[in-house]
Image 1 (cartoon, helix red, strand yellow):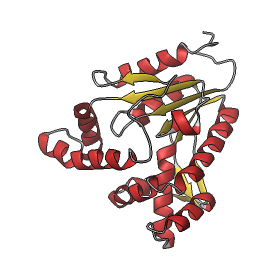
Image 2: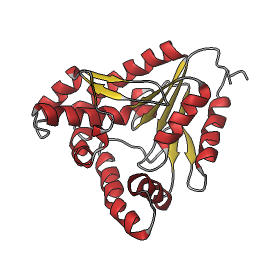
Image 3: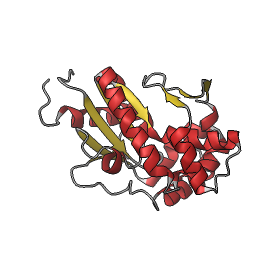
Image 4: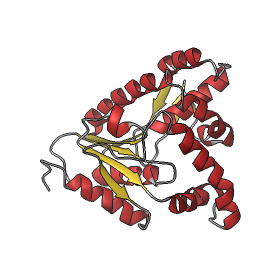
Length: 233
């Protein structure tokens, strides 16, 4: 598929819906850049912990959100995250950051700051690569309500638990699923206090991946992109 102008695809969804892996695959298929907005919140949590900023100091954390030296790769095959030249791609996925990121993501002073950085990043990536697939929370409604394609990628709780359990523990047996349940349920409950990623806003297309495998999920999203107004095959 070849787009005649830079295309912006905004994808929201709850934990375990598959939005990160699907979004990267969609960006590769379209030949455009990728933006993981959730990584920004994780990077900010890492930065504050690394520099000694109290995550409970909402104003201080918001100041750091504006000035942290964050650089993200837009390559969907290698979406690295660096801070001040240091690669923190692996560090921000640690259990330490996973436990700390909620305090950052639910900080209502931080969110507008990072949302503006996300808008700027989307515009820059789209200009440089011919388009962008951005995924996270609030992307379809707050960050990029005018995006060419807006999708809410969702799945039932059972499917989401199996996917996240497999991702974290390498298995989806009963023990692993139960170990993952609190993380997903607790994080979604906390994030839902500041962001609506369960209900689709007007104009947002819902793609339910509960009964779809990975390739089918990617195909479903690409079908939505292919069907956008003005697209030429």
